[in-house]
Amino acid sequence: MGGDGLTNIVVAFSKLDDAKSIKTILMRSGFQVVAVCTTASQVLNTCGDWDFGIVVSGYRFVDMMYEELRECLPAALEMLLVSSPAHWAEPVKGVVCLPMPLKVRDLVNTLEMMSQAQARRRRKQKAQPRKRSEEDRLLISKAKALLMERNHMTESEAHRYIQKCSMDSGTNMVETAQMVISLM
Image (cartoon, rainbow, N blue to C red):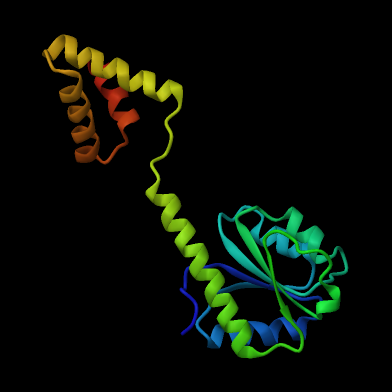
């Protein structure tokens, strides 16, 4: 058991001792704890531009409540709120709640589930081809047209040629198309 080692985790509680205790539990369970914070602004400074991660958090900080913090975090980040159920107002999107008093097994299992879900989403995102801009598509089309005209290739041959050159040179198709255009 333990973390996937890939998910960035920030532990954030207003009491430093609470945060350090949670961090110790998580590290012993194989999770990667990137930072321990005692204010919401520290959390935002730490993970404001992350593409993924989990904030294990108490419900109140000196500078804001957990709901406000959740709203300020990047959408791809999730929050695991550890507090008394009395503090869970309405369900907040992107927030999973665990009741106090905290059971170590529940904490570890919940974080494991959250990090596996994030890893699945990241794999799924990587598998999707990136959308090319209209400008990039026009550039590739222009390069294909030049190859078709000057080298008497079909459209699919020109496409495969650009694709192969891009793989061989370790550049993307847009950069390869730019090279083809500049050479001709």
